Image 1 (cartoon, one colour):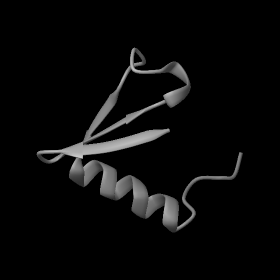
Image 2: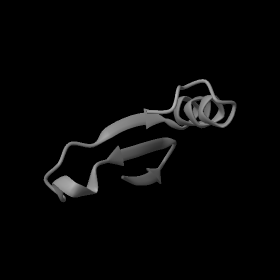
Image 3: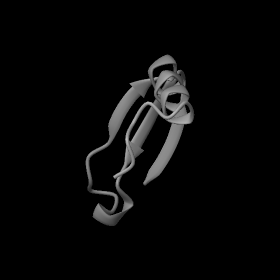
Amino acid sequence: MEVGSAAGVVGVRDTKLGAAGPVLVFTAAEFAAFLSAVKRGAFPAV
């Protein structure tokens, strides 16, 4: 997984697919909320 940010947005992509793979784009606030949820264990382990 690759994560990059620019001008208030965060892009996430699967590096196994290379540069041609799709990029999921989130606002900085959305990504911060996601990270907070991960840190507090909101998602079950796979």
